[in-house]
Image 1 (cartoon, chains in turn blue, brown):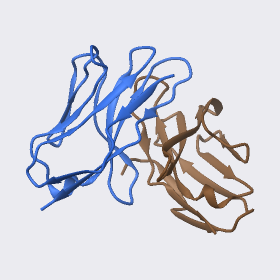
Image 2: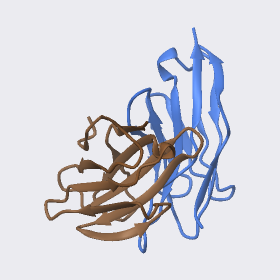
Image 3: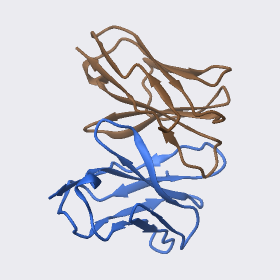
Image 4: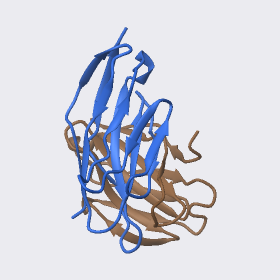
Length: 113
Length: 113
């Protein structure tokens, strides 16, 4: 079945460090890919998305590129802030049939001043 | 604000009891999904409804059931509650079943004592 695998956390960084959170997927069709962020005590919010191969999603300094050849959608940010501390979820959706948004297990990011 | 409303925000109940969680999707969204989030299991898909009909089932226990009403709000019923049912329950909605993002509510935190 369709699945998403994320690197395990927590990821602990100092402020202004470079961030990479790895995400790979397995899908039977041509998925759309998403990154969601969950701040403490809140629901998941869409951070960015890409709907086809080689698309780059970006938002709030975060970027991810849809790589079909490596089935990956790694999240990057050049300089993290303390306010970026949250749990990040990689997800995919497929059109048609029995549609279920499929999420990775989430990666906790902790940014220290 | 995602536009998805979940009530109640917190619920404390005893083992063996039954509770109902309510979700109002974003205006215009036909698809509703229920997820369970726990520390050890991550974000687990429970069930999906689309325009009043059940479309997909995930890891939903037989003690749990859901429905979507004509006004598109949805309810998740949890019965014969056990300590292990303590978790965050999220509702999400999307416009359709295609390659679109899901919008999440803030969740209901259920504690079974």
